Image 1 (tube, rainbow, N blue to C red):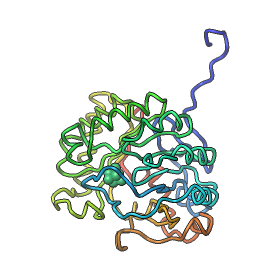
Image 2 (image 1 turned 90 degrees about the vertical axis):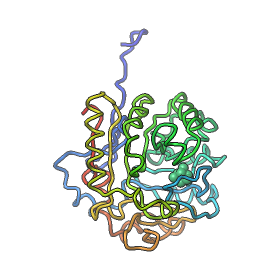
Image 3 (image 1 turned 180 degrees about the vertical axis):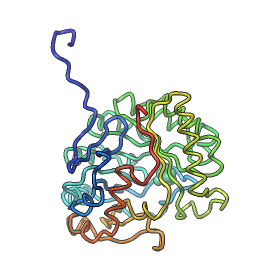
Length: 325
Ligand code: SF4
């Protein structure tokens, strides 16, 4: 009961997105019953579970492992509205970049999209203070790229203190955060510190991703690329530390196996939809169509990675440790 004697409303812990799939509000990931036939669900579905929309290619960082370095004009609000209409039915939309918060009209974009899907914002957070209050309550979470404590972060990414201050601005406005880390060999000693930072900030999850050979990552020393086995061993050590120190963020590790090939659908600023990463394609992209010209349901029919898409986003082909575990 509240102080006024009114019954309290339990906090929402998950959001139903259909087909037996729900979105875990605290852990920022999809869930489904263990016996769900994911392949059957994927084949019967008419739209993706999750799509990444690049609202800009611009960025104020130049991370050593960034796979995204090509530039093109930002989509206009009218073009974004057309994309929004053609993405009807998609469960979660990442409003991504480049760095999406560099758009001065980013809160207008959020206002346009937030009733249509669960919104998430992958960001370096440097412009978090500008937008935090206007997007609070409309985005499910911001996913902040985070490689290690200050010395590592500044070598790989950029201004640690600016990202920290702006992340706190997002949190102060009531926007939940998660974190993602691109795992390279020289970063391995810093993974536990990253998890500790995530715990202090109250991150919903810490997502580990392997680098892909594209963009700036092509200039990284070959020794920085670890094998899937090395990544899985590092993840196991991190999961053990999480238990020992009682850190709360969920953990995720995505490795580049055949089961995860092409699982992401990325919409570029010009509306072109790509499957990503497709290992034998130039630049790891497979062109699927254009959401300024046709609905995602048409594109989905010719998308060859439906099962990979659902399996990955339901945590079946990645390493996972959930909140409460
Ligand atoms: S990884 Fe993200 S933050 Fe870093 S340069 Fe690329 S788009 Fe910008």
